[in-house]
Amino acid sequence: MYGYYDLTDFSVVFREITARIEKDGDVYHYIREGRDERKEKIILGGSGRVIINPIEPVNLPKEITNFLQIKFKKLIFSEPKSSENVYLTFPIEVGVFLAAKKNIDVLDIFSLNKPKFSLYGNPRNGIICRYWESDVFSQMPEVNQLKEGIMQLRVVNTSSEWIEFSNVVFDIYAMKIYFDESVVSSKASVNISSQRVAETHFIAKPLKPGMNKALELYTARKMPVVGKKFVMEWGL
Image (cartoon, rainbow, N blue to C red; front, side, top):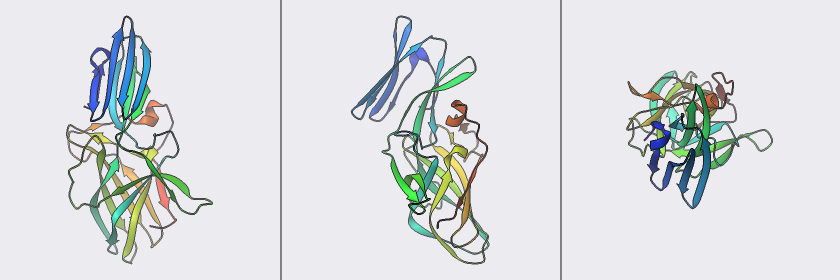
């Protein structure tokens, strides 16, 4: 499903959403249909290729935020001076890109998930986040790779106390996504320093050997972004 396609044979089905390219003379029509929505764009020139990848889940319905909040369905208690791995899920958005002559640009973005948003922090100076709820797993769960990815989260408690926390917040611009035929994944870490403060960041490593690295949307948009960490200072 994810991968590279020639313009002349691009056609994918994501459950109720279909995307395809039809040729009309020297003109190509990109058509995406589903969920009572139809989008059509015209492509001039036939030497390009189509790339379809899972992308950072903060682009729909428009660019509102670059932060992702994952709320746990059950609280986590972390032992003092400990480090453990757990697994979460995260929402997937799908990017359709056009590539030609070493240039890549965004053609379309869609998702099987309906986006929700939350406020992390207080109303005056808090931040708006893409909101997602996830169970917490001790092993890799089975998920629908068209809707959900698997995140391996390294929980590092550097404090001398038991810490209870209910969510993690990430700066999504630094997210690294990998995929293969069966799973979409990402790795991240949360470093807890006190009852109220933690730092999160993404890790640029695949969950399994042989996975493909997804195209990063901010790279396709030519946005100069360096690896970012996010300090959770409004509670865990």
